[in-house]
Image (cartoon, rainbow, N blue to C red; front, side, top):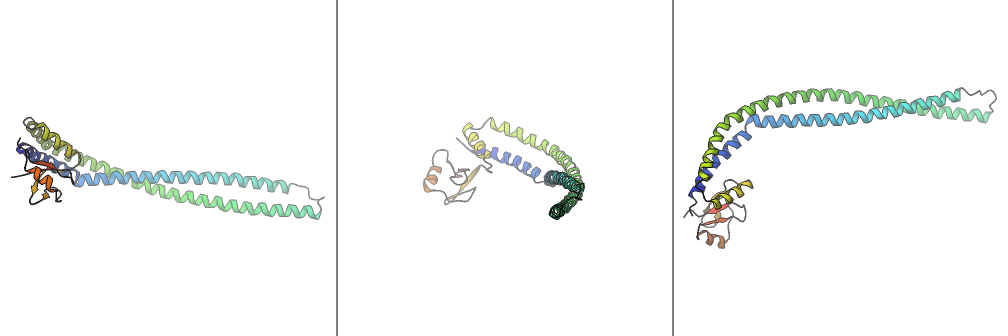
Length: 235
């Protein structure tokens, strides 16, 4: 069983592989992916800002409710008729008012702090929305550019795939199966020559003597135990 056909098939398939890599490594592809990630990052950031804003807003609501309650208690004390109160009672009310006023001041500062936080978040949100808009626009531009390039290369790619289909008709199904199995593991090229005295032509690692012996038998192919490629003996 000759491996000439599979090597011819591999040569044509490598043209397709090269074409795919040219598309993936094109500037339009790189920029498309960059701005896609930038857009996603902006929206992720906006989600975090929204969560922070909601948390700050909830804090404001709680503190306002607490502030109103403190003011109610102050009003209650202020409405007490203290004309009949003795010194001890007056001292009690005075201390209660002092505590409530201190608490009111604390809540007032906390509300101001939370409002400042909301204001800062709002500024950041506006900037991030602008950035998201710019990234999204660039993403659309480079996606269109990438799709146009893809269409151009698809003409050549379709011709190569047709050649591959034609070659498959006269190939060994065993070799073709081996080829596709290794190819599925992202190994290119799949079939590599044996490099004397003892190396794999794919990964360059030395191979065991029993594998070298088998390369001289029958079809003369063996799987590299290191990279998984199919080694063939050129001799």
